Image (tube, rainbow, N blue to C red; front, side, top):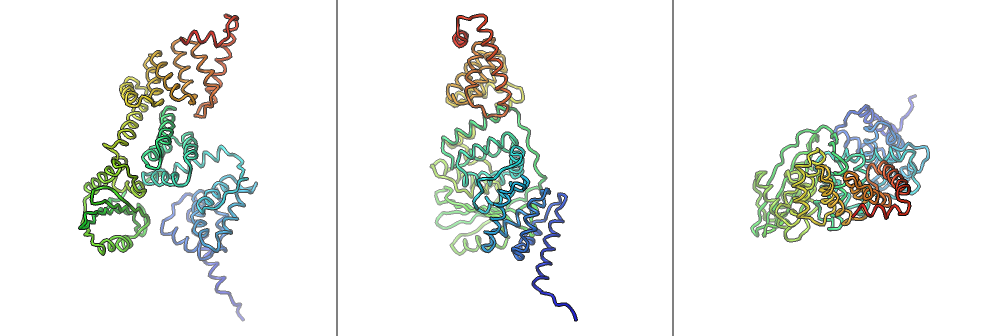
Length: 494
């Protein structure tokens, strides 16, 4: 007499084995095919709660590939109404657990954020500094293409207050400066930032450049981006819709990204839509056919003509003070665009040209070519006389050219414009020391120590400053006991 088997249990076991095989496939750093990942997602949804123990074990794996796959599958399962509460509870328990490794806690926090769940307040990490560096490295790894940078900027602006964005930028600068600067440049192009926020971020970006030359981060190998297909739909009333789609590199079966922009009869960019992971058939059904039904005539359009249409339409909208649609920023890389839509606009002159001028000058300073940087910085200061970063960089340039007096003038101007930036006082001290003016150096270092320097290398600078201040005060007491050190130093500053 044979033993009967429950077909439901047998099927679940087979599917669990399918999940295990999927994780074994990515062991050792082997990439997973997008089609295979989608298949495993379907299996994970089908087994439901039966597979959660496996998925949570893999989320805590020391193998990043296995953990990344577990993250993706748990995100799929966690969005199911029947399992969402259970997944969230398990993730929160991992974050609170004293015995869980830091990488498991960080992955759980990231997944809770992705599921819009509450984050535990009592999370503690065994090595917060290492965890922070790892988080920043993981973020930088997600900023390897213009599309990824645009997507990250969009997410930050949508989810975080500006103060938190600045904190994130500072953390990223310390670990991954190239990625931080790329992200800041993208954020500065966006309409969501007001002038105050824009000015603050420009200052942080300039300070990051000032810290020294940036070595580009190593990005993962990429296939050449497939050429986009561009078409224009024209309506008798003068409206035009630009459709641009391109295959997502490596997708099997082929999936496409789409940028769809509406240009009014007056030539102004009015609206847009960006989509990912679409099939060619879905694009035809959801976009092309409805346009034909609404009276639009769809005609082929060369890439250069499509770029020109998008640039001019966006440029006109900027000149008229309109915000550009988010879809334009998310999908403009399909047309090979970055900031061309700002050329010739007030924002273009203020944001792009001047920013590029300052960036180029900083690059020359980092390459120890102050003679070439000087005319660029002088032009920048002439056009932006109230920007402390311009004066700070020109002061450092003058110092590099041996003009300590000229350096002191511009560095002093920078400190006057932004008295809450301690590093400006440090630079004044360096220029005063080069000029042989120990009293002025002393006063600048006292002001520096009174500030709160959070830039990289602050601890070493503070030690040097404290030693100089103590030595100056000791010598002042020996040589001029009738004068306070400050009074003696003031005479040197005149």
